[in-house]
Image 1 (cartoon, rainbow, N blue to C red):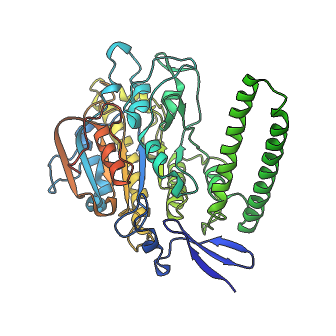
Image 2: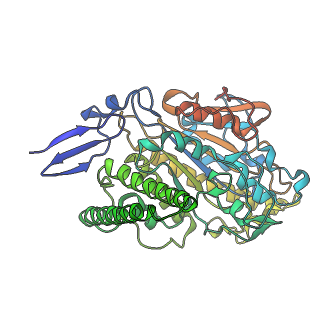
Image 3: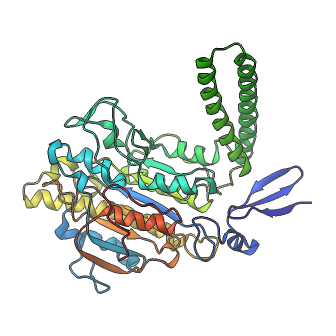
Length: 453
């Protein structure tokens, strides 16, 4: 005999025969009502998700930006693939990351573009270990909402990982290859292998194998921690004061790990995603890679493994080519077009490529039903943009930013919003933090909460 137990604000478990299995969001079980009043949920009780996507090297604004404002806007050439989603998004004109500009730091706009996009902070110009930036908006949200899900946040990329060395005019590679920052000195390393993302979320192997492996790992981890703590307590009496302090710091770290394991256990086994794990390795085709990572993010949202995600499609300065759209030259090289119409036309094709991938994501989000019966897209806030507008001039104002999703009904969608002046992009982020119940007084160079969306 089994029964269903609903944990307030979290998820349901099917309990019986000494085991419990996590269930996906089911409105018939009243899970939306159980979640109402919890942190980071909509008025209907569904989780409110936030995601941030980064595209590199700027765009050709003449073919990207709609010509008309308000609700009467007409999609321009590069955005044609988004036509069917016009009622699900807003195109924002007039947002800036001022700390991306050169100033006294000189060259390095690509590193600053990626680094400032979610932090709004000026990176310290160094190629050494003394990197310094600032916490990113996704991690500010994760600090408030992390306890609600198994994973506080999810960081994805289609690039490799580079955390050291000089990548752009004396800036560390850490700035250019990391979108999310836990603190001023600690980037959140993104994962680029879809298979590893799946295994992190749900485990490897079949469903039965995943459950058995998880139980074994948890038992082994707790046994090791018990041994370490017992051994440390026995040693403590023989140590001097300074060493006792060091040992106490060490034991505090061990306890934090133990708490993380206990937290994971409180959610029960990961839910069955209902799909097979991706093939091992990274797809050779770029658009397949992007879409598979989109699929992993949507799986994480649908099963409420996390509500916060970031995705670096490519680092700023990326020189990838796009043969599927007739572009065999490198993106970064083309971005320094100096007004050459041939090069600009090719960049516009790249812009079209990226927006076609975004359309795929929006379609998947709109066709997936949430716990309250509404589309995932309705209960989400999604920023699509980059740290440069004009790649030739390295401009960090009038950034190409699309805000998709309805925030559970809080956003006024279906518009091209002209803010008339350069406002900090971080003002938008403060608004998003406010909507998920994680208000912040300041982020980067923010000047207030953006109300116009």
